[in-house]
Length: 92
Image (cartoon, rainbow, N blue to C red; front, side, top):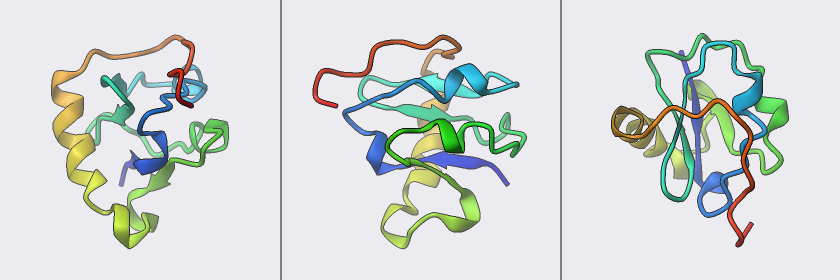
């Protein structure tokens, strides 16, 4: 079961999580990051690194954010992989 990036990442896009990912399964969208569900190895290294607590194990996602399971699966297909820390969005 993979981890999923949820609503708190939207419009902030902190990238602290991507530098600790051992399998490079983060993808950069315009306003947030996504985790590719087939590439995530469930190591949990990214979870404590997220300053806005946006990353959840698929089994523990709050009900109001369950749609992010599908969003991550879809968006990670088209977005470029991200492996280096970048500046967050200005609105964060």
